[in-house]
Length: 379
Image (cartoon, rainbow, N blue to C red; front, top):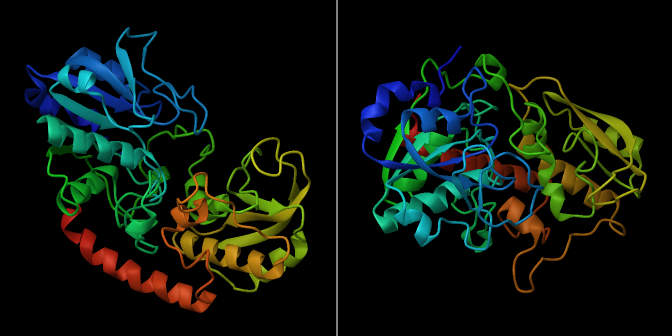
């Protein structure tokens, strides 16, 4: 069993002595005995503020819902929302503390908001002369496998702020180091490392218990499916939200399940099998509509390449159903659409390259990012 960053705090208590502490966390911020990082820091440091990412400190806010600051019922400590228009701590909050910490379970994806909540707070710490601490946690998909295209900054957003690949293969602490130096945030940063963690570990190898980081990531395996099928979020194809297996099952009313499964299985992608499936989402896209599609079955985590498979799935559905498949319009006129934000580029939406050319881009830019990330690896 590994020791999480938060479980190593006793070795670093001198760092917190005499400092007013703020904490970014959510229900995943626990130790091996299910004790909250909030309780741990309240006992061992002068915890004066809590900061809430998307979904709330206690996980009681739906995806995408903006909310204001409030007082935490349990601790009576002020909770400052970081999921609002500014996405960063207020001047009032920054003046009340000396150091901001983060203890959150990331899922290893470029388009997951928690890592950019961290980045915005690091920028605020630099501007206000405060310190930033990361209690490191495992990447559930391991820290060996890297995959994806580099984000084009023309498509910068809260689900992709720095030019990293979709599956960077880094812990949240390593990403903080990358953001701070490579992309020149320049705050005073401390990463409290895990003990006995190995890069090749999947989450189940760590001996820790999984707590879902957000409502649609219920299981460890969902992290793999999310990195594959979330690109469909920007289309009229359901990515399985509103079902019991989000991102594991995808489809639309116009899709023939058997035909799509046959086509996807004909690629012989390693580590994954596509089963014909029918389902009716109870919320989100295609609500109450019978959808044909596929259920993804993860056979081998070491061999599965979720980004490549997700791009193939998108390309296949678009070509099989050109008169039915649509890309969703941008939420704001003049801004990139969700498909561009999720893929971090414009050439997927605009169909500038065939699938083989897309795969070559993935391979080339993955190699580029592997070189960039090398000096920030801690394990």
